[in-house]
Image (cartoon, rainbow, N blue to C red; front, side, top):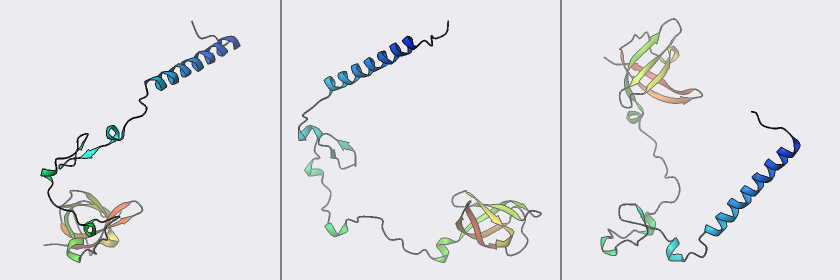
Length: 149
């Protein structure tokens, strides 16, 4: 049989849910651990970077850390050279009619979109190329494409 949709049944169901919620809250309050000491709340990091409840052994301490060596925030990026920006890859797909294709990057094995406007001339599949990656609205795409021998 189906559920009853009477007003009394709905009211009983609400009251039951309210009582269950109150019981759960009372149980949580009873089982909560209050008044933990500072030592119980303390956590330590060992020499391997793992969190532990016991303090690290001072004999295993490796080196002193100088205050000026600590870097807060994001480190400044040094501008990359032209050689670091240039990647090599192979054209895996190119549609001459539509004027686009994809280059497989040798380093990351990632497929990068390439448009005919960024090519020096006609290319075909399996041509080896060097290129740079720029990020556009739809993701990475290849620019400054040069055909390699």
